[in-house]
Length: 431
RNA sequence: UCCGGAAUAGCUCAGCGGUAGAGCGGGUGGCUGUUAACCACUAGGUCGGGGGUUCGAAUCCCUCUUCCGGAGCCA
Image 1 (cartoon, rainbow, N blue to C red):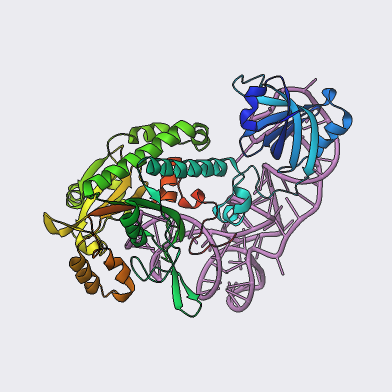
Image 2: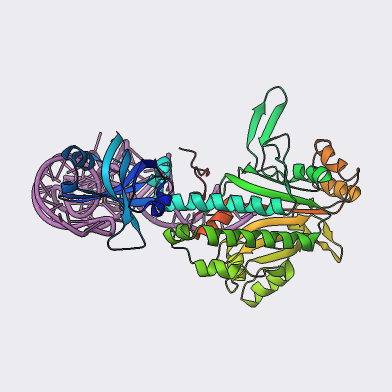
């Protein structure tokens, strides 16, 4: 007899097969027992009918509890009521372990309870669907980059210094050297990689000790940073747009049933796969003021502002050319107006907010040095970074995608905490 | 960090000054097509901790703890 996965069941119609997995739910009516069975690849209804089975097998079926593990054999056939669905006529049950009372029930639960039981919650259909979409988003990003000549170049996670601010670092003791920090972005290291490989990316966890408590923040999240030599501001945005549109298409074509489980509005995703809009920061502020906001031209955009800007757009919007004061030291100034930098944020539609931050980098040694001095940075600690501008400096650009924010948008879910197996937030590190 | 809200059965909640409740989950029994199946019975609680007001507190007040929502910052 053949061992198969639930996802392949339709290819075995009329045949006896063996499946290995868990009990998601049980419904029984006297001589009939319906076991909702899952094996990681999918879910199927298995039916035990007393007159067709020997007594011991039927008793085994009766003893099963929610989440018990078992090997089940049966004949694959179409569901008598829904011909699009397959079910399994049970011929044998080998119980692996009878589960104790399973804490996650069929009724609703609160977020605190579910997060405390995250190790079990991950088995639920919605969490299963989100993890599969996360996997697909991750693969789609790597596919696009690979096809566009980007090489994987992993940045260190333990670092001697900060990349951006210094208030948001997790600090730890590093042998006799003193303090080390968990990386909050691999960007500066990636810039070294392009001088060897031309185009590079990293993909890994980054850490921010920000005390932010919103549905868009984690203290540990996965970021894909990409960096490319000889790419300037406009092309940088074009690469981001092509990459995101590739991700949208991949999710739509390969995660259809997952999107159904999550009740995702697929029309909204389809509509986002069209040329993205571009708006300068100045234009964005004008737009907000026309809508009644009293925001001024030197301000960063808040969450509400982002929603307001994208609410009438079906596609993501780039906000580009930001006031230099509110962006990082390494961003190149706009040659047409030195008060602005060649940076861009990509805001997703439907109120999902910022998913990418990117910029063209300053490639002039003296300009970069003077800005780092103005920010009172430790020049000696960043000598290696300044060296890049001394030995064959080239114009270059890059961007960083927050994986979980992208998955939140693709999945259409409310809170980022469900997009990573074990979310780390300021008040939660268990399990 | 700031501003709001919440804490009662394993879970989700109702009760808001006078004997602690429901649904789900658990247990037992019933049911040949169920779809969070259904029906009957049943077990299950120091009402988050501490202090106060009152004849009497789950209920009112103070305080601590934990969690949730939002803001700022960011991906």
